[in-house]
Length: 384
Image (cartoon, rainbow, N blue to C red; front, side, top):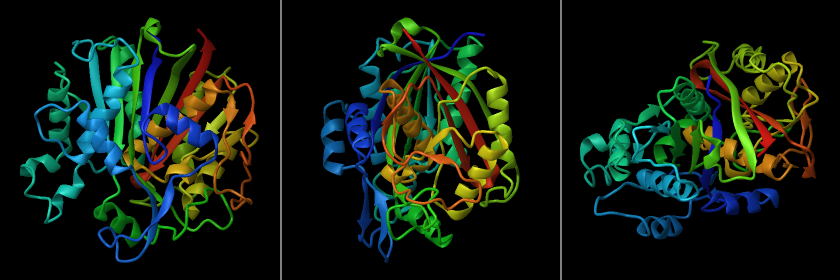
């Protein structure tokens, strides 16, 4: 099968408007989660990380055409444009596919004051995909991956399969979601929102923080198009479902355990240098992950969660957090899991409590979501 390389990437989040800005703040352990008191979202305050609206408009105005785009679409167009600028990948080629990862897309267009600003079908993810396709003049219909919170990791696995099969040489994977009243009220109905910035795996954790953002990863079978001095390869990946509950994770971590096992058995000799966990800071998710890692024999491997920095970005999380993991690997830096102080899980893990330099040649990235879905990818770094 053809190899699959990470060629270029970009992040727009509360930490910055490109990968470099995000890395600078991430490595300085600066979080972007703030207290939200705007009643537009919820009557009560909650914590979330938001993309700066003024910077987004300025970034979009630099690339816009005559069409009108929603905030969700602007995020995608800005990030994809940033990533494309770093490589000579031709997005107009029939050899290049676009995959969009999102859970909610333009869900804010259901709101009374917004629903008449765009045509009614704009609330559908497929319509956003058409808008993105037309903006970039892509000859290929984009693929939508909307699979709860594993969407971003699942999108990379789908991209890998398309490249390995020879259907496409390049795949642009972009994940995006926003903080909206619909999303905030949904998680609040589960009593899942913390009144403070989230604390993954900590004994005082009391819920998640919402986040929004977008990230783009360009994958290719041609490593000559790399922007980096190192070669990052998507070695393997797996998607599973434990069918445990509509929202609650399996108590024995079965689905995530199987995803990890399926991923690692493809490259059994690869030593895992660190794990970027899903790490939502909810009681049941963090416990489930600890069980799955323990069952997989990975309790000694350094583990972190990036959600203490940017919150849970839903369908964008798997893409944003993969880019952050690659940035960590590029700099051989194990990044502190922000918000963690003392162990709050029954199967203790090697949580990264302070930044430290180490040789990082591989990363296991995992994700879990509603409906019992789980996904894992194994990323390897080699000298160019």
